[in-house]
Image 1 (cartoon, helix red, strand yellow):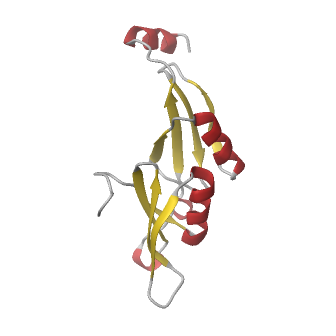
Image 2 (spheres, helix red, strand yellow; image 1 turned 120 degrees about the vertical axis):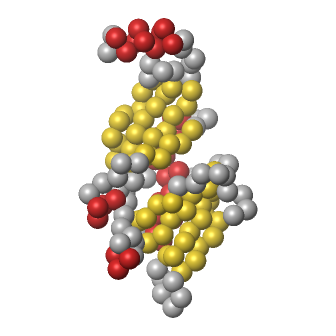
Image 3 (cartoon, helix red, strand yellow; image 1 turned 180 degrees about the vertical axis):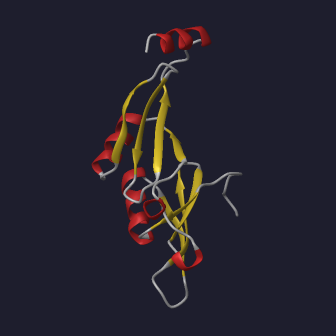
Length: 145
């Protein structure tokens, strides 16, 4: 697809129209295109852009085994966002109602980093590189944890 990078997450959610709005409000994602199952309001495919990356989503289709994380008991995948203004982005994400699962903090690997869960059950992380510690400095910091 034009504009897509080699790897793009595809999310299944329990209310795609609401999710599109939430990702716009919380993450600043831009809606590129939405296709519906003919004759319905069920989202078959939505394409969103976040900075220079794209991701897609659709509604659940239980009859085909297509379920979101809340229906399957969670997710083992975390989608990561690289930020250039992490505090502002984090504040916007939290204000939009994300569940903080790891508070934003400066990490020993040189990144300001935090994790959250969106209202649809997907896990996300966000980070901004703030320093470049050496391997030795990171190992020492891990030992002190």
